Image (cartoon, rainbow, N blue to C red; front, side, top):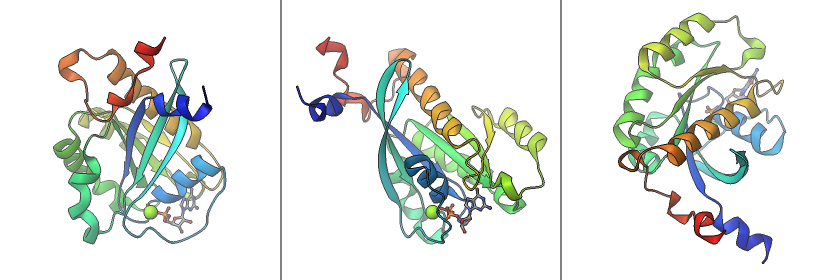
Length: 195
Ligand code: GDP
Ligand code: MG
């Protein structure tokens, strides 16, 4: 059996990355996928990439959807959220407005993706003063699944963020009772019948 065949059988977990434009979503994803810090300004529309990740001793595939936060692309959000298993919700530690807009993002994600795990990410730790307490309080009040601070520039917290959300997504999918299972796109999982 080829590696390609095995790769096709891996469960696919859809991860959406949301937050205001400029908070560092694309840079964070790029750092995670390539190990490289891209100092750029970009994101037109939304991008998509896949990456293997270990969860619970099993290799699954993260399909990572990078959303452009600009208002003009928001009409795409329902489609973007469809079938998502988890969400990284990013705000910029150096720009309070991006924190104040979190409510809008949580509302959109809940409306279109349901009660999926949401991990709050405070970005640009390398140039930030700090707001840890506020963010942690927010996570508790809104019933989110955790808070991490990252620097894509200094490579701080990036692997941890993707690993934690992957673990949270997997835990919900693998161990939830059937009524709470998220049907799409985990139907590609057939490792259970192939062993
Ligand atoms: P997006 O619109 O949320 O995808 O944001 P981008 O990933 O395009 O990043 C916006 C800007 O923030 C770019 O100029 C990045 O170089 C910068 N940036 C992203 N991550 C970091 C970081 O960890 N530290 C610093 N200092 N700048 C960052
Ligand atoms: Mg972007």
